[in-house]
Amino acid sequence: MVESNEEGMKHVKKWLLIIIALSLLLIAPAVGKRHEVEWNNRTYEIIMPYDEIEAWLQQDSEHVWKKLKEAGLTTVSVEAETLESLEKSGHVLLLKMDEWKHTLVLLNERVDQMPSRGLVVYPLNDAFPVASSLRDTFGDDVREVEINQKTYYVIEGNAKKIERVPLGYDEAKVAHVIERGFMVVLRIPDERDMNEASVRVLQQIEALKNEHTFKLLPTGEEVAGYPTDVAKWGERWKEAGYVLLSTEFYEAKGLTTLAKAMDVHVVRLHSLNLEQRKPNEAVDVAIRAIKERNIRALFIRPYASADTEQNMEKTITVMKQIVQHMPSHYTLGKSEPFAPIERSSIATIGFVIGATAFVFLAVRSLVSPMMASLAAGGTLILSVAGTVLAIDLALKAVALLVAIITPIYAAKPSSVQEGWRGTFMAYGRAIAISFVGISWIVTMLYGNEYIAYVGEGFRGVKLVYVVPIVAMVALVLPSIVQEPILPFMKRLWKHPIAVGHVVLSLIIFALLAYYVLRSGNTGTASALELAARQKLEEWLYVRPRTKEFLLGFPAYLLALFVINKQKQLGAILLVVGTIGWLSIINTFTHLHIPLFISFVRTMYSLGLGLFIGIALIYVYKWVWKKVIR
Image (cartoon, rainbow, N blue to C red):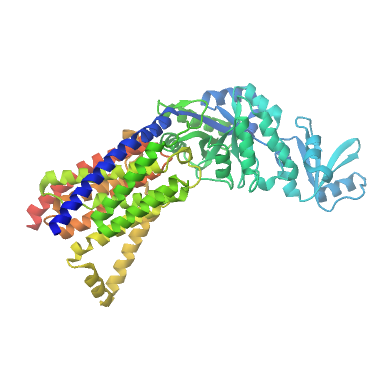
């Protein structure tokens, strides 16, 4: 009966493997299409804000524009003018209400019915239509006062808020930038600064669209129109032909809604403040953003701490180095959104049946047939809900499940033959399982919103770093303690707690916390490690992950080599080796990273890990022969 069950399971496994192979063929075109779209979009642009260039233009503006263009500047961002910005650029004089009243006393003038709070505006020139803009923006709250044949505009209200209300874009400034040969990015005002009349500023955005002005970049914490009208304006701007710039590591409220309303016509932007980085570091950061994270726009905030000439020269030097050291297959120019990609029905069927079969095999090999059936059933239900009912969260749940199961399935060998041949075969098996799981994840979370990182992307990065380690510990614990888990846990529960146990527990907890906290984008690394990373990147184009090729994979290879003779040591090393497999899964869950980069990085890790693992095995054999025995 047992043999019959085993034969039946082998038969089922054979058919499931055939299903997985066929489904991989079905999803292959979708994976290839994503790579093609990413590879064909290799033009980037460099943007600087006009208000930070403005101080440089006071001397010889034509010379400044020429130097910026030679340095690589392609685009200038322009914000809607406010009373605050007009005062800064010398177009108006602003007086608080107390200052205004003191001025009237000195002039021996009297104005009836003065508001208790507000702002007084005195235009210094006609470079910007101040009077009409104030009337259109503040309506009845504006009062004209003439004193000594000079016209002042008194605005009632909160002075600080009045200063920040957008009045409109300076069309002469926009035209001036275009005439100098640059493209223009319009900054969308922050909703918190707008009033009811500010809708005309958003309408002006539509009117300003042309072949040189076609990108929008939100300002502040809330996108204009938030929370109710964001989609409406997104649709109007999409119809006008605009592209949205999305700033990396920062998302204003309403940005996801705006991006989706604009059909994800999004270009990813990295904001680089030169004052916060050393010049060589700024160059490295900029290049890495372009080649590794699908960034296609660099927003340069120039140096501002020295005098004007020094600030300009230092900024231009860094910009030239960025362009000079950028890989040759990237071109400076007019950045564009990624071409649309959609998953076909064939690819959808492929990942649904393939992922279901894959989850069943993985859980069956790790736990039990009953749990395998439940896990596969859940995968199928969630996959159908995500594809047929378009429930985005369901697909993300399936992707998370696959991302957690894959490294455990890869790292836990079913059996290993002794010697080099068995070690290499088991290593190859783990690689194959990992890339099969990666294929499902890449195909499930598919589309321009993932490439452009619109919204939350893949959820559960920290879980993928922790759960496989914990699961592997539970799976190999009987081999380590040399008894079943339940009796061991009961004995451990009743065992007296010594100081040494507490100290050991704290050390383990600290190591685990450090491991989790330093993972992902917010992780930290030592200066020595950062220097080593930089060298690897210079030599290899993209650096492999340290925890993969120096820790996870060498430990895994040694585990495979020794596990038949020294089960305890092999089991402990399998836990360490799991880090390598979960790390490469995590690499591919960062869906805004080009597939090419993730693949090259992973192959470097697997290759270097193999060589270091072989060396580690030889060291182990020497120590075993010369020291231990």
